[in-house]
Length: 115
Image 1 (cartoon, helix red, strand yellow):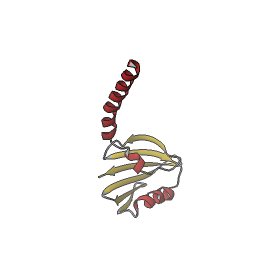
Image 2: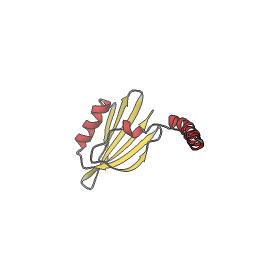
Image 3: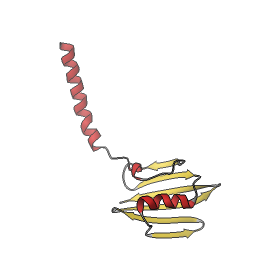
Image 4: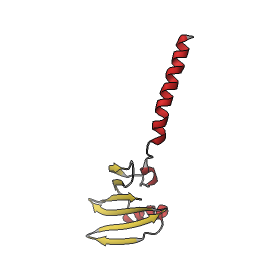
């Protein structure tokens, strides 16, 4: 009986100590940033805003643009400079800056999500 009581006290203590920490951990923002299925992420800093995600994909530029338009609507700005397409989306009080550039027969996509 003493072992069961000790085990219950131990489990209760562990639960009480870990529950508040889990409740205040920041959510993973990358879940809110869609990625193509073949995305090879090489940098991800998305624990809080501003969030940064960088990846390579073999998807076409138009397919990438379509993916983000489906989730964020029409871009508020669109500019092409030195072969790079930069688009800014405003959606639900968040701003998403998307840069697509050609890299060895694939695309590099750089995303900055701000408040």
